Picture 1 (spheres, rainbow, N blue to C red):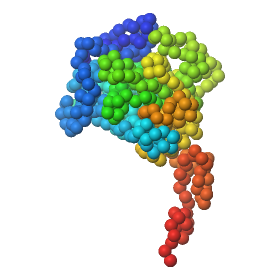
Picture 2 (cartoon, helix red, strand yellow; picture 1 turned 45 degrees about the horizontal axis):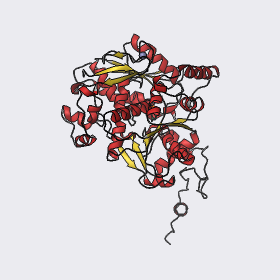
Picture 3 (cartoon, rainbow, N blue to C red; picture 1 turned 45 degrees about the vertical axis):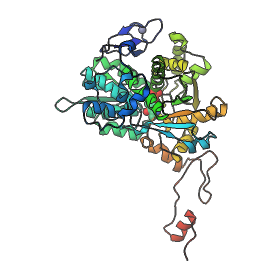
Picture 4 (tube, rainbow, N blue to C red; picture 1 turned 30 degrees about the vertical axis):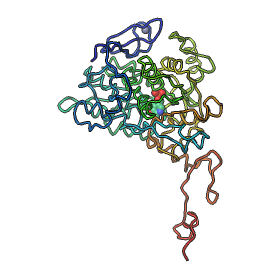
Length: 474
Ligand SMILES: *Cc1c(COP(=O)(O)O)cnc(C)c1O
Ligand SMILES: [Zn+2]
């Protein structure tokens, strides 16, 4: 490990530091979250971000090449905690920024204003790989053979995939242990955890309960925790912002919009911009919009209705505790079709408040029907995504209507996961019996609804032609 990196409590009234190899996920002094911190003035950082571009074209066959091939480690000077030979990579982060002009048109935005950062291109199909490569690199440095996470699906899919490949030949395998709750889990994701051989435990409780258990047990069972509570994971997720910048030829966009679940991504993005600005590598910082699902909007409620703020690192913990108590007393559980963000106690809440502060952020919530309509819009005009990802585009729509985002501002929505993760939600939307849609011969669904249902036709030439609408040859 690098000598100029360490861990540090993010709370202003504490700031306690810990060595890089100390395994802890909350400050021992105050319970605050930890950052990976660097003595930047003792490290060599490229003066210009263009430096990173030339690493794209590698074949990835040798040690340096493998790191250069990764969309995360290509930027290793900006997450300088790992030594090259500890890096565990499977070629993650080779993702794309799509200029989505057709979708922009649908939202009355100008061409060149809307971009979709498609993280579904990652090997396990979600952005989680960006973080998992960094988490496994740390696990390898610590020589841990047992890793664990609580998951709504994608974290476990990603962790299981890395566990299946992390140990070099001749070394014992890495055991992955997954805690899933009784809430929704998309089958695409569950199938990955099972396929990659992770031990999969279904706990009779929701995600928030699983999270508590895995934290409680990680020490006792020697499991290295790979939830986004792990600050090393968030280091890897910073690279999503570097690639967005690269996709825009290093011009800073006006807005970044991201769905909010455990708020790891939001937190990582904030840290990325904080450091880029500190290092003088960008002239400004974009604004941040975090989008909750209506059925899991703890952040939105605390931020907008109770004015909870970062407040220079002195967060009003009582307000948070009070909210959690109210939720418990009312038996309130997170509930949304966007299972990846079905979380009521976001573990990175305080870091997300820091990101919102730095990036002059806003928080909104969108309901399930709106999410599904926007998911279908994304699919109609580009790569398909899973429901949680589409919350970002639904949030954009809302913020455009509110006038918070201008129609000629440059906006990047993060599409966090692949459409094939949750085909059930997609098919149900387009073809389900409860889909709000018309039936042929009146195939125009109500306005706003993008449903595209399969049409039943008799095995008859004329009937098929009538449906397709071509004149028949006589
Ligand atoms: C994990 C996940 C999220 C939520 O991200 P957080 O960092 O937990 O806020 C959103 N979308 C998808 C597809 C995910 O897998
Ligand atoms: Zn502390």
